Image 1 (tube, rainbow, N blue to C red):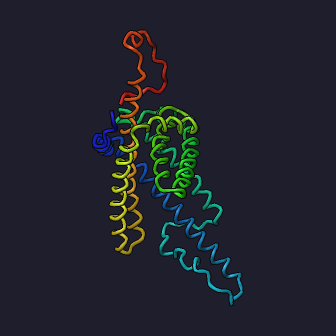
Image 2: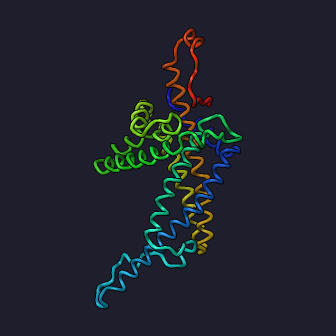
Length: 278
């Protein structure tokens, strides 16, 4: 059985606007606001650092074009007056927090829970899963970048092969190495369908980005930031939900292929602590 793209999209859309999906969207909105503050703080701190460095140069030194492109204070209304190292640390910490939120989101959207998020989705090996998800994401980005540098096709193939690394880490509690291997096996035979699914999600992202860009013409940076955060939160939940439902399709097929016969199933005890019933 091949991956059903339409089912993954429709199921993902339904889960996005059910209670848990909306709750996750709210979390992403709150995080997005904090992340916007961190991003603008980093931009403003970088600009101040560059200006200080330029002020120490001789007056006849040629102007650096890179400095003139740095954002002004008006463009970073949410920035905090902190030094550059603190801003860098804040951005790094938030990157780790973002991965933790995505881990919990995957666990929720893969399961059949739609009204409440069970405590174990948040508490179960969260630090380990987040660390593996963070490192695994970096590894995938490096591998895809190398593939894109060699030729575009290898990069796309690698990206599709590791499409479910985060899901394997979040749901199966695997380390990132095992998750890379499991995702490669799970996507085998389904990469063309996954390409179609990824293409649809890419187009959705482009449309949302374009809508957010239109708001920028209003000329109010704060309004533009808030609107883009709201749109980005809903789009992120939709993307995670679609990937989660696609993962459920393929894992159901995988589990059915290796399931024991009926006699063995009757006498088997399910000792798994992490059992989903999508």
